Image 1 (tube, rainbow, N blue to C red):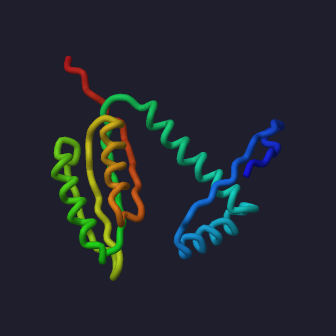
Image 2 (cartoon, rainbow, N blue to C red):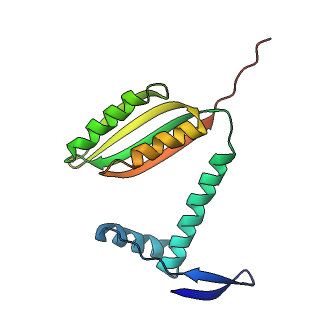
Amino acid sequence: MHINTWVNRKVVLMVTVSITVPGNLLKKFDSFLKTRGYYSRSEAFRDALRSLISEFELLEKESGRVAATIVATYEYSKKDVITRLIRLTCDCDDVVIESVHRRLGDYKCLTLFVAEGTVQTIQSLAGRIRAIRGIEQVKTILIPVQEHEQA
């Protein structure tokens, strides 16, 4: 379904999108809406999309080498996730400097990757982590690495 609406004094075509989310995530999202003052799920979702795309576009402009941390969370019961993460660490040993696995409480695990490479190689690594079935959340932080010129 398409809807025309006014945004910043311009008529914008809005498209209806259907997504599937776990019930507990939707409850948290609805609570977030109330505390942040959003008037609808759609507005909060659009804001989240803009933020995600803005972050991606900013990273695309970065050139040169970066240091990165990538954090992934998943349920402890999904044993194949840690096996896949270990395999990925070995496959990407030219980028991954270190990885640390920690159990969080009774049900969750966290794996932290410390990596160095180009923005593209780090984004590729984060994408490969995100693609592992059972991964719940992935966060990436990039810091530009300044090359020192020799005198």
